[in-house]
Length: 438
Image (cartoon, rainbow, N blue to C red; front, side):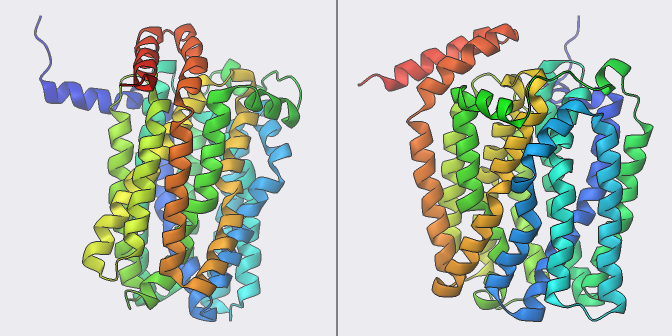
């Protein structure tokens, strides 16, 4: 029997989640929508900085957009466990489309004030607070085999970051040519793609119906705190979100004050960040098995912190772009690996609540990080604020690495139950050997 050529095998391995029709629909719809979302993200930050010239207000705007994820988590997680997730997503995507349209009309036909932009950003934050746990939990309903879940999550991350590569670059051109309002309008129209994709899906009744779940948000919190692999990964995500991710909030100030550029420079710099992010996600998509992936999180986080620290010392686009790409490679590898491990290990009846806590760690800490970044940039300048962020991320990576044996010991039995025990045992043996003195 002839074997397929090696390149065909690699491609089939990379794209194996696409054999599921529902996942193909979800992927294509989200790709179009997320390009628009990234256009709006760049345009919104540039608009605020153009109107105010204040790094602090950049942080305040990000805070308003992200803090609802933290405040509403006790409601959003149980909702994702108890109600039809596709219905939740259809509602949240429709409301997001209306929010973008309102923002476009305000900018194109009005005289936008900072408080109005911040209020609309906060409204989108409320919508996203319900959208994120449902969307993260929905992925497992789109693939029939658990071993393909890691590939689906990695491809999802590559799609997110491909949009991150395209959206900001297009936004930079559109802002310079037509203004920020055009980006908001395009984003509003882009939601039609994901709404159409969700409507076209055929979800099995057993998968689509309400799920039985015991307890509320507190039950999910108790479960996470008692299971070391998910607990430590959540803590690591919180640190990365609080002290690492907010560098993106300072990018308009960095571009204008350090690189002396404009919206096109911002777009191209964010595009370079997207290249690194896509490479990180694709590397994860080629992994055959998620067992042992938790051991790599500290390495990826270290790359994130190292790249961010080096980037903060650059004042030339030629060096800034590849350093930001390196940082994004580490950041996305860290976040996507964390998501994959959590979704693989979590019990199905607690998935929505755990993913709500994931949203709290991933996005709920970001608003406070944005405020801290804005305050630090106002006092120290954007470059030194980024240096501080990078060093904190490096310290967190070192602490997580010291817990890797405990994490592997508790993760191994779950991998065994899921039929991944051979690789899990090998990873645990390697962890024990690494702990032994030479």
